[in-house]
Length: 409
Image 1 (cartoon, helix red, strand yellow):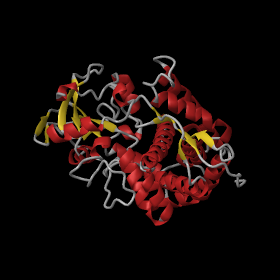
Image 2: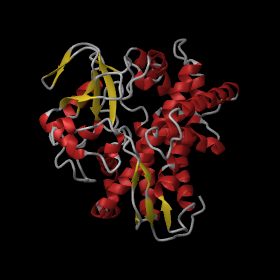
Image 3: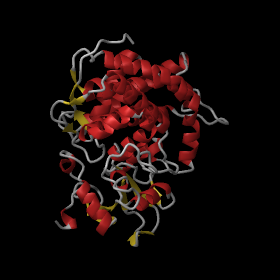
């Protein structure tokens, strides 16, 4: 197969699994590869697939801009780009620094610690709902529920509204999957519905604030600087998608990795002290966000390849986390792997994931409780993957386990 036959634009290329052989070929022969983009506004883009290259692109905001054309793969018109720049993931310093300084007030270590007991309760209640059945769709009933409940709790979304957020998130992220879309405008409509809901919820928090994140952010003020309503709306969208989709698919993908590697599940059962390193290996091995996009802000050179100002650049976390020069035997799922400097959270720099510690805590609690309550969990059907080249996602994961009594969480 010629390099020109590789097609990272087509979501169909990812339905049966991530094309790791393509990424290995690119890393070996063309770690900065000019890839045609038949559906984009640009003629094509530079696909950066090496660990070193991806780290450099992510950290070097002076040469590779998030704000110029957003951090998303698709190309948008100028009006939509201007709106998208109000979202933190689509900002460059110093605007990004100012915004992050404000939203950090809602992600203090104390807030994460205070949330853990509630996450344990939520996880046990989720498992209580299915434990007597002996089988379930792991995605719909387990992995999707926990981050959804956590984000709802964190943001102060009423419990009865959480599945609205789930539906909006699915419709936005699943824009290329027919299961979640019923028209070309479904994703845009979902975003508009979410904005309207966020507006209404923010107004409630301004009048009746509590200890939740949205209450904190509606009143956040540093030296006279505060978030506008549009910025609050965009942050709500970012958290609804990033905090929901990524953790859900990480937990689901990690469960599949354990099914494919039962020796690692047995190893973790025998030695719970491996859980911290197991979490990092889950993050590396699954890499739920497969890529982000940048725009070259000035002429530069990467891996000896000249990149011109204005060129579209897409760097692939999913490939960087399997780079043979950065990880020993990278295609092996090894819960004791150390060191493990993966870039599932971005690999450092200004765009390091704001919710990294929250995600790690959710993953820890979920797998602790699964090990305790469903130690013999096993695959019970076909894994159905999301049709997406952005999210390494699983839609349905049938599992079976020995039925047990609920613990009454």
